[in-house]
Amino acid sequence: MPRLAMYAGSFDPITNGHTDLIERSLQFVDRLIVAVAVNVQKQSLFTVEEREALIAATVNNDPRVEVHSFEGLLVEFALSKNVPVLIRGLRAVSDYEYEYQMALMNRHLAPTMETVFMVPSLDTTYISSSMVREVAKFGGDISKLVHPSVAKALKQKFGTG
Image (cartoon, rainbow, N blue to C red; front, side, top):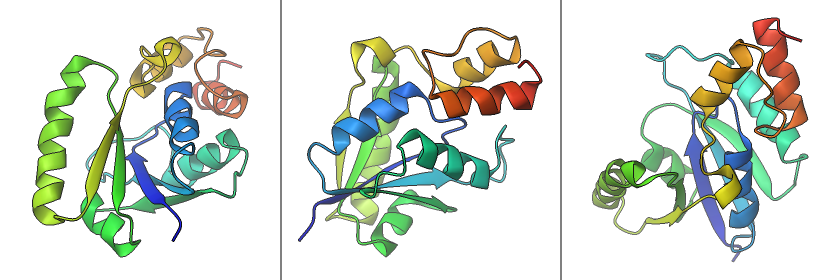
């Protein structure tokens, strides 16, 4: 049976930090579902469809990576896809408390589901989608923070390129 995991987030936009975790996850799973969270209460820069397309481009349409969007509880979406493992990234110590509580709630809702915490590579630890958006908005250099297709899309959104 293939090893399957899910990595979820808003990915608005996907950064090199996200890509780092995706690539390293594929070292211990056969297939990875990248799940784009749809939060109707949050104003996203990119539409769900744009985020899905940018993720696919960033992973070079790797057949081991599936990209899906979901609304509602992550754990319910993961169960609907028969995913036994959730992958969560921890950039900073401050992320741990929230992620730990989320993992415990997911364990309560789905006792057989495991959560694996991964730390980013040192060179991507400081990258966040919100920081990337801010730098891109003011025309800063984001070439080392995101895939070229994401940089192009950000420049188009902000009219800086």
